[in-house]
Image (cartoon, rainbow over all chains, first blue to last red; front, side, top):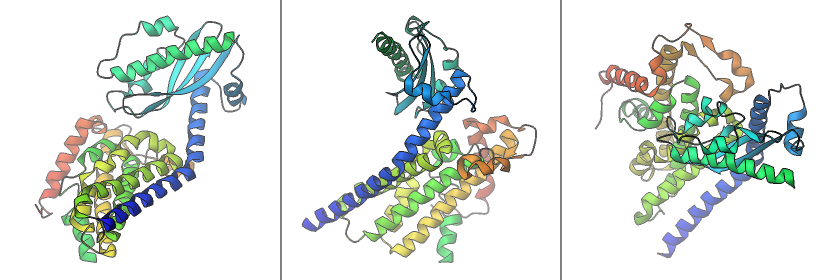
Length: 161
Length: 207
């Protein structure tokens, strides 16, 4: 019994150490990849080319309340976190959204990477509230809808502050 | 050694003979590069987990055998997901879901249970290597066929796995594929079914 427990403990610690070590090694690289992916998405949303150096600065500073904010967040989807990029137009109080990364089921929840979000560019909170749910992917839809509406509210509060 | 490898790759091929791992096989093999990415990930997991299981085989308690196997396989699956997300991010975005479900692939748990838990490390390594190569052959074969007949190209997306320099590897064979359905799930079943029927005659199937 003691021997079995020892073996299991050694195996558990070995697996845990391997995971910890590789996670520590890859975490900065993964975050850099995600940041680069967000930058690419923002450039597409803001119609900026690679020569314009302002996107990273805009993400950091958030523009000012008379123009636009570039923001990102992660929400819980059906199968895992969904990374989202937002461009919020402060003067018109409308938001555009894109997915940076997701783990939703192919054929069901992956509609979020298609034309669906592009068709919702510059939508207000009221527009998002009135959307019809997507059957077969209600959890995914609700996650995106809640994220967009919450981002509008948070951005308004930040701007007022 | 050659005989053991030959058995693992051909006469006991996990996909074409044992019909294991069909979900990722059919889902990811829409292009050669996607198929190659999953093949490399699967081989890493099966070889790594079998080496560890074989190394500890005399010490793993009988009653905890399967949970320990799953723990080890899940560890290696998580490692490969982290490595893929770090060093092949574009490919990770395309195939991440199916890399994560490698842990449920019967092929890996089956070889651990039938072979690695009973044989020395070197034999288990060979067997795992053969299993991985066999699965890779199945994936790559299906990937090439589906990409050629579905899109008319080969090596589309090579830069996702081999870096920006590989963007020029893409070969346009026809203007567009003559069987576009091959890019999707129904086409995958049709192509795989035909391939299985063609292979069934020359390969002896072991139950």
